[in-house]
Amino acid sequence: MPNVARVVVDALNEGQGILRLAPTWVPRSFLQPGKRLKLHPNDYYALGTHRGGIDERWFASTTVAKNENAAHDEGLSYVVFGKDKVTLKDAVEELGADLIGPRIWKKYQRWPVYSKFFDNMGPIPHHMHQNDKQAKLVGQEGKPESYYFPPQMNAIGNNFPYTFMGLEPGTTKQDIIRCLDRWNEGDNGILDYSKAYRLKPGTGWLIPPCVLHAPGSLVTYEPQWGSDVFGMYQSMVEGRAVPRSLLTKDFPEAKHNDNKYLVEALDWEGNVNPNFKDSHYLEPIPVANTEKEGYVDRWIVYGRIGGKQLFTAKELTVNPGAKCVIEDGGAYGWITVQGEGTVGKLRLQTPAMIRFGAMTEDEVFVTEKAAKEGVTFVNTGSEPLVGLRYFGPDACPDAPEVGAYKKK
Image (cartoon, rainbow, N blue to C red):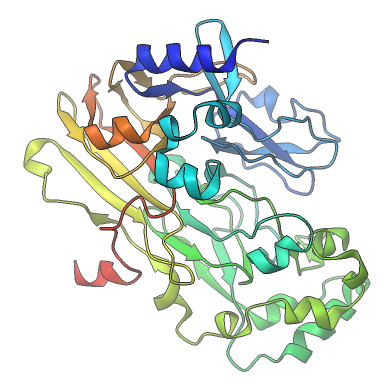
């Protein structure tokens, strides 16, 4: 086993505060992969059909995927330096504030967020993620999340590029209790009480805990809290049965058959909000007017959940031949979605196809110190260099609020 501190310190010195990360692939046994993650066609079931197809790639993750029969490190990102590799989780535990900054380290003692590409052929079940109070009952943390649909990943929308969100105003709790009562009778009809929104590449959504949502089939970039809790409230999707265990897995065992309790766990006002779109929909907002300088940085995830800024994200586009220095308020995970160039001293290149287990040059983690001092991005290719980066809590106090895109 390599010495974690030595490997990471050497990597930081070589990369001037920027770490190279290896791709992290996660399967889901109950979903069908959309096959737009650039994995080789033979590798979407690289972990075996019993584990399910690979439909997610996680970025700068110190969060373990809560899958059945999973390896101990499933979901964890690896820092790679020369022939050595160590998990980003271990790196943060060893170097703490030197990586993620003193404020986040002091409060959380970990990197408390992560992001992923989520890629499915069709929709997934109407579900919610527990809040902190609920998740604590089963020894976990709650999970707010956000969505952005990168145009580069969405040339094809697959089977159902629409997402049901929330519940129609006027829906009663008894309506949804009856849906759960019908779990083993086929489709329990919960979507009869919801509304589907058409998904548009280049836009996004902010989703608080306890709000029902059934993500559609666009490839989704998802900055979110570092947890993997959920409860599925829909019993059948595209003719496939959803095991009731996926409804109850992150609720106390004594409540698994209490449908009233499971419905009471929903944020009712949040679900039946008559202004749901206005409360959650996001469009990109330029950080500054820099087009004449050959680059544009845009806010793609912003706003507060429960009055708190838990995560934010930006999309940087650098034109061919252009160079820029970007200063940020905190550490971030970066994934390249188009073009080639450099970030600091490290090369960036967007792969066309990736073999499972192979290394790439599209993902890095930038420490808080490097981010605050300013990171230099250079486009060395013939097309725009585009990357997505996400931040931890309170890293971007100047981020807009939900709805600000209307005023731009």
